[in-house]
Image (tube, rainbow, N blue to C red; front, side):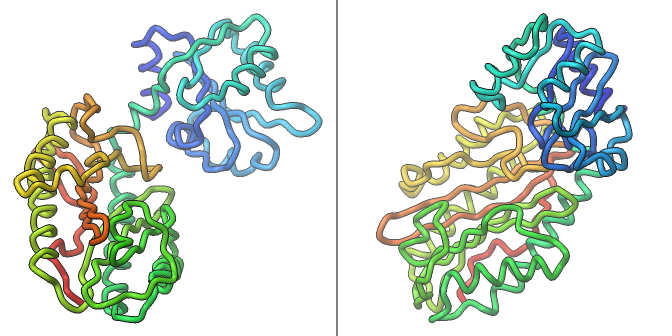
Length: 355
């Protein structure tokens, strides 16, 4: 079954007459088209990709399962969309309630005369949580590249090197592998490692610093996301205690990430283990997120997510502890849920490295 057929079945199941796929990541999953502008119109028995004339040739090459319609100046995009929907006999159509802006909806409402617009969850967002064998292959390669990047970085860690120096090494290494960063890399050290999404700066590494690397590679439009924390020069008992408890929480969460589990319960397990040492109060973000064409793809592992765990899903699992004035530890891996349990796709050592 093609992705288009899966989408059409989802529309039939929801008794929805049509849907405007406006999120570019959903358009890519549905059609294979990787351009920067495109909207798909899908009904239970038809579909069309609409893009502009910049992508006429590219869209024809990439989009195998539905016709492509392109427009050019002076035709406005919304006029062209309306023409396609009228041609398809559409009188009611859903839109992505999480992606369409108020201004965008107003313009559509003014332009699409005689067509009722109604909000709904993007069916693709749910469908793409379960990865195909080809998607897993791409994620697996992106994970291999991220592992290799960390192997490249470790020998470069020494007192006096700046966070920014290491950031440049991440970007150059991945480019030389024919890849690119999946997101702006995080390299933070010392007290700054207590910032979960801190930006690399000119701070120089010092003996006794935690250093956290959060990096990801992109391979054929699919992402990896791995985090490791190391210590420069010498690790104290406090360093080791915090790291060991975060690792214990992550290991237990990975073991629990299996078919039939719920993401909310897996998150709670990690927090219980951190609380054995009074550290759960310093873990403020969710345990993980879906991974695929987007780094933060559909699905969350968090206290508020009622998230069934199913085979074919790919998750990050990333507990962290962040102590103001001391530093932070995060350990993150990418995991594929299988019928038998879980397969960890990132392989860089999870033991504490003192470098």
